[in-house]
Image (cartoon, rainbow, N blue to C red; front, side, top):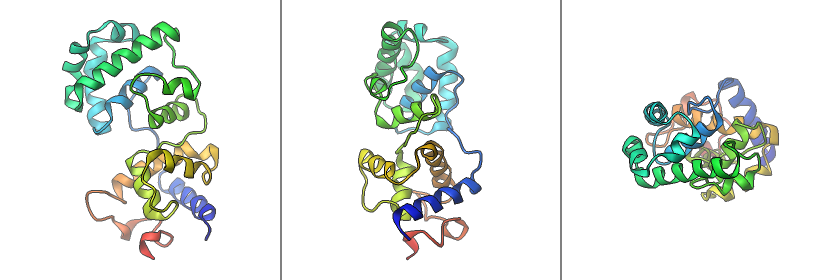
Length: 210
């Protein structure tokens, strides 16, 4: 089986296994996803979803967060870890959205990348989930699983994994595929325990088993 054939087979099997998989960060406005994905660095999505409730209760919109002091933001987001740097990035990002983009997230990948605290993973998440554009989100689950399965081999750097996947994953499948890898990585192909290969829908085609 070629890499292309393996990738397409994995995509189809995960579609059946997780038909409704989507982003596990809660948001009802695009800018809130930008805040949450910054807070999610080295923190669980579940914790972020709890913390942002308090953040938005006090600062309900872009202007409020842009006007807030970094200290006040940090006091709320501290449970997510790296509180100072995350608070500083969120504040600066909201100011940039307010001052340069009229309170809206730009629909250009490179423009999103220039927002404070935003890397390629975050920019791809915004492009895929907010704008419905082709996207490859190389989070830790994605990187671990595509290496284990054999879609890529020995590539751990997020950008290099992303570039490799762009060559294999149909553009319209990328965003949902990465979301499904997150669900599969949490439930079956786990990192902190031995993977549950006996209940994996990919067991017979996974390189780990050859």
